[in-house]
Image (cartoon, rainbow, N blue to C red; front, side):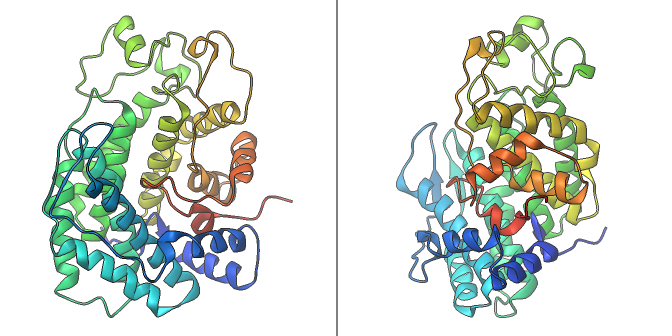
Length: 363
């Protein structure tokens, strides 16, 4: 296959639209751009803090864990700004941040290593693909050094098997893997990532056609009704659109929805329609969770009558595809996206998606 660049979540069409709409002062892009431009990540004085080893235990970690995620988002922020406003200083800053990390970074360690590599790796690949595709002053051997960093310090972590972990892990890991695969033009990792998406999405978002209970993740020893119920946070009633982590909180479901959209969007730019393959499942899951995030009353059979409404800025990319490209109607998703615009960043792996994937609301 022939890879298309830029093509990691954002492609030429998104970047061109953002540039044109911001220049014309059109909403929702102009408000989103102003928020982007005034964020701390957009400062031309931003200083990266690279580390050779990033050790991230569960629920905590040294400063290097936060630094890595923030620096990756900052590199993407400047790459996006350069694409929109054409200021070369932002291109230089994006490259400076990436070069600083590729000069020293070796590995991730501790319990959260795979998730940390996923969050940071997806942002790094997104930034790198934009810069390599359009900025000629990011030259060899610095590009090759950055590619080698992704191959050695990120890919092994995000390709690891985590079948019994909560599903947002594998989806975030697959987001990073497919993003890195496109930037590296690695067909084997790209195909592997598509397979992981196709297996995990049906095991995370339920539809009645799956049977009386959700499909278990591949290779996980989750077989009986009681085991499935425990894995789904004590939820034993399954309806269209519910997710494995719905009864944990909507924040983690949001991570899974965002990662699923990133994977599908990246595949779309490479000529593979994962969106279409999982259309009913993803659209139903979007509407189900957006409704409750917006404040709908929770029935007693769902999570004991209570959900944690903690979803972040996670739905722009999916809404853009299903409404703008296909004409589907997602009223709850649309309402939630408009309520939370302009979408900023979750400080993990979602950033500035109103700028890249915003669209005017339908007349």
